[in-house]
Length: 135
Image (tube, one colour):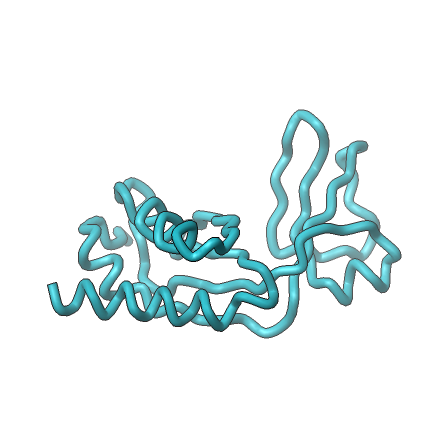
């Protein structure tokens, strides 16, 4: 199953969707997840294992965390070899002063943005999609 490659089509079809809940970033220098922890994403770095988990889950496990954020999924099936999609999005968010941590998965791209700026981010993304539809 191949994804969309054309940048204009990607922007037009992105259909941003805000997930419920708040996520946070935790890190484990011993590369071990605590038992029962169910992260939405992990990444192994030289310094340790990063896990993105629900804030409630982190707090229930008494884990230190940073960056309370909301998850926005771009519902277009973006090709892994598409060029410029996340660059266009992150550029637009950067102009608005919105931090964005992006995760590219097989089917979709996912954005973690500051909790308090999630609705604003959705509007910026919708505006970008609309601009592409008119251009």
